[in-house]
Length: 344
Image 1: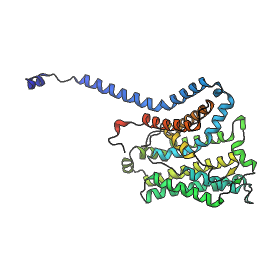
Image 2 (image 1 turned 45 degrees about the vertical axis):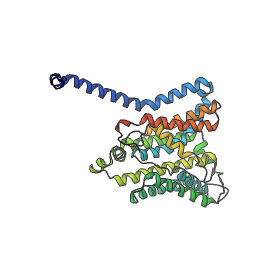
Image 3 (image 1 turned 30 degrees about the vertical axis):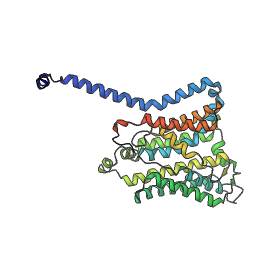
Image 4 (image 1 turned 60 degrees about the vertical axis):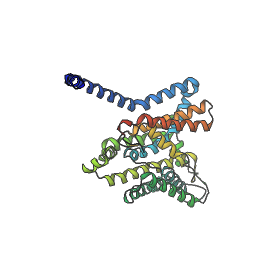
């Protein structure tokens, strides 16, 4: 009887199956659109909630402070985004920032050395960042070690060299033209914000208008397929780490100009903010999904959250916990778990 019932059951019409497939595809596109726009929605929601609790949030002075607070994190995120888009990660940010800041501060007018080459100090500082970035990529490729371990070690190397150079001394910068890189206010906006905006434009051009940008996405989506398609995987990986190193070094230069000093601890907390902003912005840790504009949104989410909690008088230890929860929530929203057979 059961066999007869099964045999007598009419097959589902092809049109009904096609409709189900279309509905499933539409649902998938809707979820994808949500993942794409979720960071923007979160940012707008945060601004509205914080503004409702404290009207000073939307004041001109506070908005300028937000832009200034976001400037250096934006610069750091521009390089980190390319690395994460490949499915790798760069944990050497603090070491590169510290060493670049120390190098720059020692080459402008200061209270430790007699060297004073002004804005030319930016060149060797960026070269230091490029060198550390190259070592990150080269060691990662040559030794076949995980990127997080390679870059973490290189970050400690950078911090160690910065500490050894100064021996615990803080270099105080007296070159006001150098400090203008961060503290100047063209059109009433801090110079660091203009530098950050230029970095976003440069990173966007690299991402959208170069073969390197396309190769980064290809490697992040499927490295095996990318290699078969002729993408120079090793060279692209090394170049991505070099670019990340240069942006991190520029962040170090801006930090030195902002604080008027250089020392090994100037980069404390920069790694957390950088990685958190890239992830919160919607760039997937698995690679292949995201953009530098996503990272800009992520920076503002992190900065607005921190600024809002200060305005509302929330204790610092609670702020750190809230930022940690924000990262977990962002990863949970951005990750497509239906495509993961195993979670490690």
